[in-house]
Image (cartoon, rainbow, N blue to C red; front, side, top):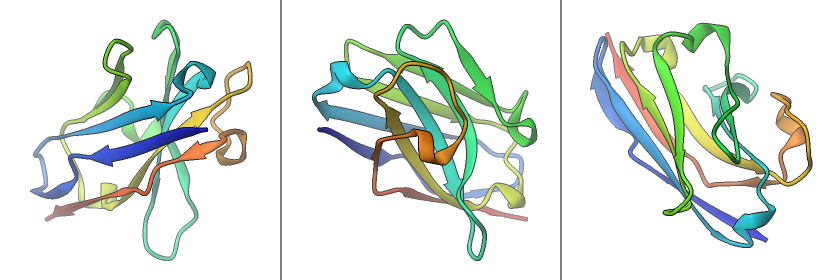
Length: 124
């Protein structure tokens, strides 16, 4: 089992920045790929970004490319999501997820472990 705890959410004005953190514990060596997803009210959970265990592979959803950066510190078992130039449409609950299997996927069903989520609200 892998436990994930997100932090860093909050209320920010449009154009501002936030950095989300995801602390992993438990059998962290079984987490091959880490991802960030988000879910706005009334919408399905959607992919935001992913990063491989080594950090050499990253991938972003089109709406956040050039504004968000995913990174990880394996010594701290922590994954980060730096969010810049935030827009009101970025408002959502952001979830950290871990994938145990090999391979890269942006599909929500490809991830085995999930955090409880952290709220990000961007005001216009």
